[in-house]
Length: 447
Image 1: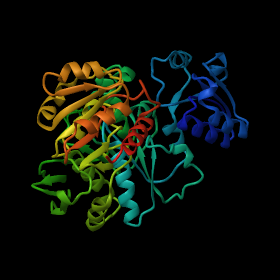
Image 2 (image 1 turned 90 degrees about the vertical axis):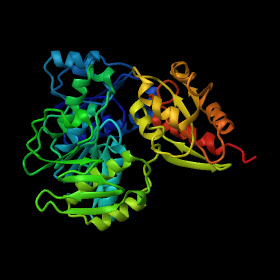
Image 3 (image 1 turned 135 degrees about the vertical axis):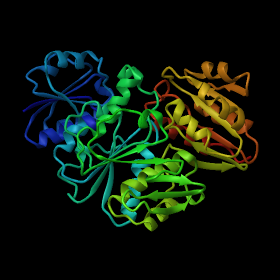
Image 4 (image 1 turned 60 degrees about the vertical axis):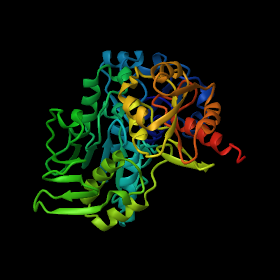
């Protein structure tokens, strides 16, 4: 079979190498120039995969039976439109990799919380003695696992709307939709299309599978899905069945006996914030399907400290905590961060906007924030929105913002870097942005 792979990022390279191992004729096409992808080109050269960089030529679609596209290439890209007009099937790396796997799969999607919940589920499973690995949009492409992973290992896959939008036969045994708020609309066109892509996670599930949904999220709970799977809900309020928060405890009530079981006292969780209680409830429902005990769930939640760049504690200096939340690439993610702390906050925010509307944060800012440091392309928009409400300062760089954060923070307060924006105005990605923040924080002097 002739396979064209679009994109030379992690997923593209993994798909190309897998397709080559399976005996296909592979051609990889990347829009960016070679200087950005020399390590990737070296991997392709090492196995003899043909490629082009710096644009998609006529060769991209020539004699191609199927296209494997990288997540970041939008439907309106000319090369995608040309392929569709030519009737060439287009799938994601997630779809391609999973066709070669027989492992149990737990798939997690949602606008926010995907990485934390994916990592948490794998953490609990491994703590309970089950073999598990986190993969997908979290960093390790599924295609890398093919031919190397034990068939009994449970794969927990973080799935983005980009990946799900190009799936046909993807079939997770457990699917989780955490929440859906407007995001990536430049890619999907409309919120309806974005929501539909998220629900592709369940389209191939059967009555033997499980779909876990957020009962408190209107876009999730009200979506008219036609899933064949068993459905369980989680909520921050008591329910007749599922996982929920009752007073200060996390509980599960099963669908058969309707017996309420207390998992733990919420305050015993190591991760802060109600949103992490939701993530924990979703994770608990998922691992219970693999017969993990409540005790193992509780002990795991007491030990799990989170993921890098998501409410990540960096340092305490002069009784001021510095928190890295670079993964907050949209307004809703910043809402969760701003609601997670009781201490006064100096908020560092900004970057590249995606039709951002900040009014949903107004009450939190009024109650919790005593200074905002504005950065990036959105710094004027943030400054103009909040300058009448709270002290706002424009910064020339992230390093400058960190220095201003220290200068404007009181003892026993928090300097919270939760951008509410994409990173691409100044950084390669949110990981790069978070690393720069942490380096700037660690460079601050004691005196």
